[in-house]
Image 1 (cartoon, one colour):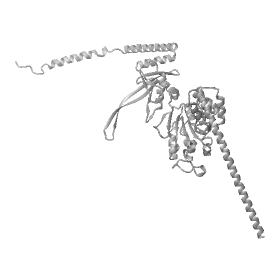
Image 2 (cartoon, one colour):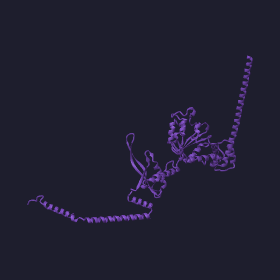
Image 3 (tube, one colour):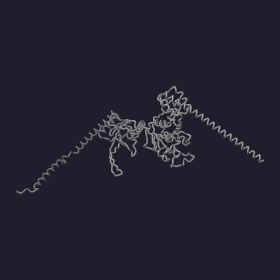
Image 4 (cartoon, helix red, strand yellow):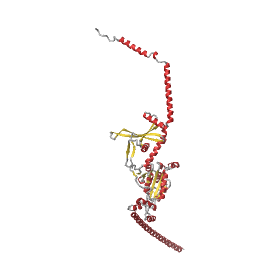
Length: 516
């Protein structure tokens, strides 16, 4: 028997495939397709059902509008949209920590503002404290959310932190990799409230954060030009503890209050928002304490400017630009800080190669004085009469404050500060002596500090004042003697001159007669 050749069964296979094809064709034959009438009937039924559903939904929506307030409907829609992942109605503002090389003011303001909005539902908080801070700084941690409401608008704040690898190369060409944390705050809300959030809510956040920051502010004392050499201004002097004439004190406080409230006024009249004060009087009358009291009262930092360390007008301008707003610039002992040339001697034509009176005047009220807002410039001197009149006019030194010797009212303030006394049997004698001698508040304070017992301290002050009075009388007596001696000497010189004059006249007369 020979084996079967390949392909002998192929006709049978083709016949079978052909049969299957005919069966499939029979299933989709024209006779089995639905009629046009059936299709139209089905479409009509579907369209009618859709219209019915739409009508029902409209009725439900109208009923809902009548029963549920709009604000509640919006909140429900927002919640349902968040659950279903529908964020098309939400807008998010991203506030990065840094704006290029500088700090983003809006980020800092948002952090400060959110401290006041932390609720018990926030589970993770970030706590920090810098060496100069008085209290802890508490902010939300990354990933935490805070819900706030502004004029019936619900907004959601969220802290976002991302870590990236930063690669740098050193001088030898080696690559160093380090993790860098980038922080940002996201603010989400319904997109239809975009204009109100940008025009009203964010400015409100800025203003509130500014107020909070000023309340918690730690004042700084910084030598101008030395940016890393600042210390906390912990000077305890206040207007309440200052041994100063009460009337003058009130005038100064009213002037300061008026100054800080007049931003729009200064802009309207075309003046730089600054104020100049001249404190003059003998040493020990409280000029430095008054400056500290002003800083504590206004919450202003102090910049100490030493003119003798400056080489040129351009350096002075550079330092002026570097000062911050809401600060006090102090130039102590202006009469001996620098050897300015008098105006008539050409002090205005020296250029920028040296520090001149012209440069100082530009610093006070020239074009460079407008580089900043809400600044106070304070000059102090022991000898007002030595100052150039150009420095003293309004606009440069707007208010002149005479820091006088101690007065009876000043003594009472010191007695209250140091001894806790408002009255004592020795007060009358002390007040009488204070009006008769020149004694500074510093001298009185030193005597009151010598004992914690009021009687001992006040008796010591009485003894000191009597000694000062004796010295004063002695000095006056010696002065009168010197004056009388000088007058006598002058009289003798005058008589001698007159005698010489008469003798000269007689000689001239004799010569005249001899010639005749």
